Length: 227
Image 1 (tube, rainbow, N blue to C red):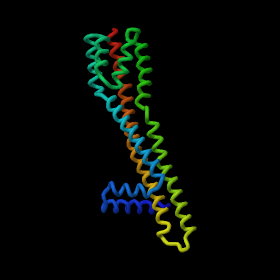
Image 2: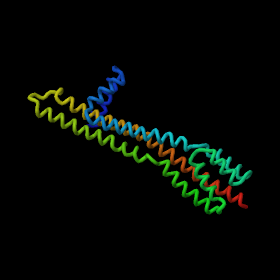
Image 3: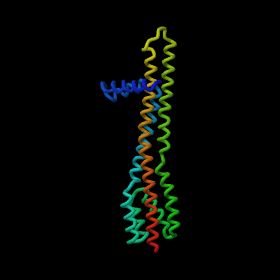
Image 4: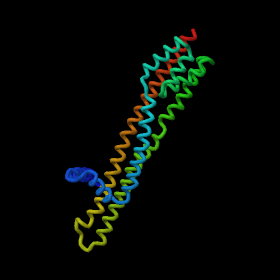
């Protein structure tokens, strides 16, 4: 299937959508797309479910890092490790959890606190990345389902040609339309989920970077307190 043909069909779909209600139009095209539209829809629904869960989790994991580090340093200077731990307990976010793990081992020495921060940081990173593999899976599966539906639609079209006494565009139009629709919807699902996935990866990278930078500041603050 040529790219120009697909783009032309997409333009035709948008033109039709302007003349009909969007929901009614999508329902009609969904039915017209055939049986492979259902697994594509399932891929979208499950992929969005994982995306919204990650969005909620990463939002809760985020915090004003600079402000939090200043609060920890102020607590260490005024009340020591115990006061700093209270600040961590009253704060939410990945960095607060990592700091709390390090401060729990601060009495055993700076090296123990640093090791605890590194170990818990790895655990926290795994928690942040949980579920991304499933979003990535549906990004891959949706276009494959669409292409499979395309193959099925083309087979139906050629079967119709083989059975017809006289060949006309109407005979093969249904199969070709089904083939193009499944490809289109599969690619749209993949693009939607890909945007979410890239956003999450960027968000996690920023969180991990802030976590590493602030952990160094915490260790430095503990060194200063021990002097």
